[in-house]
Length: 369
Ligand SMILES: Cc1cc2nc3c(=O)[nH]c(=O)nc-3n(C[C@H](O)[C@H](O)[C@H](O)COP(=O)(O)OP(=O)(O)OC[C@H]3O[C@@H](n4cnc5c(N)ncnc54)[C@H](O)[C@@H]3O)c2cc1C
Image (tube, rainbow, N blue to C red; front, side, top):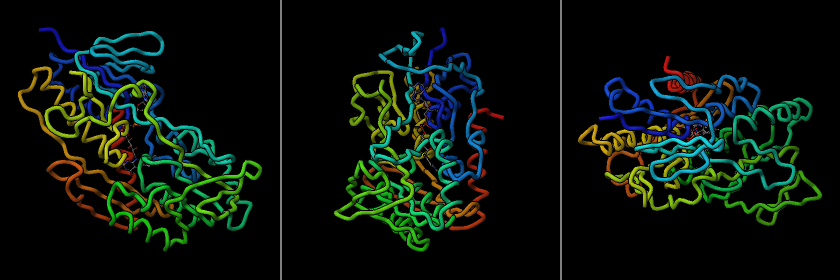
């Protein structure tokens, strides 16, 4: 029997975990894995250290994943059953297709705001942030979450705390009624407490308006706020080629988990999936490993499949080497219909070792040293 072609789109956390689980020596006679990635592989959690000038972006960017798969550098712009198309006209035949392209960011809709929620933007905005902190005493900084969901829901609050500890007077505006709603009340209360203890002003249920003639002003809930710098966590949208699919009815569990309705051999995982789960690396990882198992069953290589439940951990940075850690366990049972178990640690300097370990784990995931 000839080997099956599995094409994976996106070498982020979801796609790489899926590729690693399939490209194992024991399946090498049965499967050819092709991993397609547009641009470099980036570790999004590096955004905050880069924005604050603490680390170079190169610490969180790798160009070429290595492993027992074929790596293709290219941008996918169309999918159909059994076929993947790149923007440059290249086509790939596939017995199974796994999509993990994450989310694309829109330009900020707030005049004068710097959009910051990607490593490249953080790199560009860093000089503005550092020069403001240097030249103005107690600069007024706004962090505006423009729309939900966003990648790593607690992270904007962590950035606010960091800036407050660097001398800024910081306000976070969020459209949510409670911070990090997707993770439950306990996490929201913790995040609010950390903000209050670090003198960060949090404005929830914020309906933002602005004045095009004065780019440093924000109006929210009938009040005017003046700032020296506005940082925007821009709206996140699906990549263009995914927008024609109905992803809202994708099952999260069972034998058809993550399979796109109407297709027999196309799965979608990670941040791209509009599910009531946090946009977190630990979720994308669990889904990547689950789909690898479902693909093996679909191709007749394994008789059973195993489901990996998400246990994401998120780091909330407080000072250069001080972090809190929020761990969620989605346990066993139907996702979304049971309480999430939560463990919160820190703030502590010891957790900076865990953050460094997480970066190292990502590096190993990409280049498999
Ligand atoms: C500031 C910040 C801090 C974070 N901190 C944490 C944390 O502490 N813990 C945690 O669990 N999570 C954290 N996250 C979230 C985590 O990074 C994401 O949830 C995770 O990366 C999602 O994985 P993914 O595979 O779905 O998408 P991604 O990792 O975004 O990967 C998608 C890949 O697909 C590629 N791609 C996109 N479109 C195409 C195309 N058309 N063709 C080819 N390739 C394409 C992209 O270039 C990208 O490499 C953080 C995020 C941010 C922004």
